[in-house]
Image 1 (tube, rainbow, N blue to C red):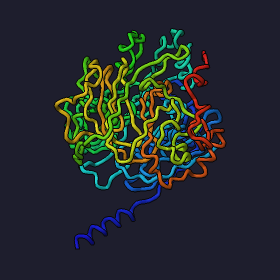
Image 2: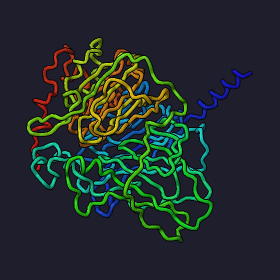
Image 3: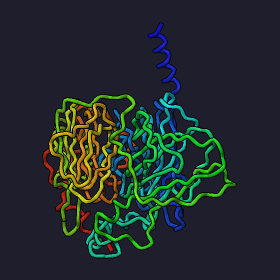
Image 4: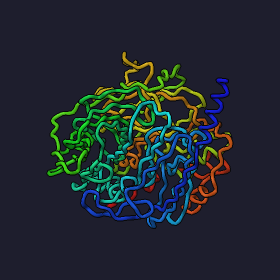
Length: 554
């Protein structure tokens, strides 16, 4: 009888699953979220881009039509691991070709992870120009009570478009032009909440709200505080957590990270309350010895509004922050520490100067996309797919065996904080050092959890380190990279080629191949496009021949 009941329950859940379709034109629109009017990348003539809401186990089908005219595009489904669907990851140059103007492309995959995610372009630094939006996967068996849901996004904002900023950043002009911050990444003009300013979040008295928070910023993280409404953390990056009451502590959300928190509203409507968010100046000025720009203000204000007739309170002043350490969270399922470790990979984040331009490196290699998307290489070189050589030197490939327990040790030798992200996995975070503690000493701290929290993005402290673990059970080609768009463009990436000999019958859809043809990009062979001899890499893109270093823009 019990087995029959379980079977019927499983069948009913499958029967309830549905297919959710979206048909999107990606095009230019005009918007002024901070009062400055500029072109932004929108969807179906509107911006901000729409939120996607699906239920756990739904199938999501999104067809995009590139009507930008002057830029290629694509969409990455951030935090969705794409088990069995590595070709739907959306990372241009790795899992697909860029989608050129006047081309269409369909993403089609099951959504088997609940929680808070987002979609964004993984092409040409586009998402800071607007091509991004929330993706919320609702769970009928969410472990905690709430009455209503709210989504809040946080981001920095620029008045200049990203192609100009990226070209300045990766050119000798960036090094010599003081107006571009003397070789540093351009500073945002403002911060946004829900892609606007002075935002009102309407709430009802005596309710418990589940708030999905998403940092969609290009560069700095954000500190968040709700006056009079302490947070209880219940989810990070798609991982449910045991309830953790933060009290007066602030949330520090790194670019690309997500938090879900519960708040309980007051029982009366006698006043409204301020929401405080500020861009993390520790990522902008002090590490580089740059004085703050006169008049620059990274604060963004919103309000919890109980009654529109009541006044909106002024912003609070903070002289210090008490940030909660997310490594201390405990996953709701209490999944045990993965062990024993089969392989440790150490990633050293450093710098190199190439043709007078500062590039970021991992283990002395700066990332450069190749002539063939790396996933397509894995699918078309036969038994050579387990040889890292075929993927090209400057994709910085690490080939993983199926089922291995991988330990990643990331040593950050920079003065920058880096929000490091791994596609294809929620990994266990064993530990993260304080700033200026040097490299991983080889032995763990005494307080490593037996049930570590899992995330897909972790903020590395400057001159510090972090240790992660995951099981290589998701065949595909997955990027490991900093989620600051300037740093992606300057090469702070590596490639995890995971169990390529287990990709099985994965077939690239015809419209994906057509996008390659329309773009003029090879879709077979090794990194150089060689289909006859996979070990002949003549013509691969190397730092010595990459066109990225020849444009003295500005």
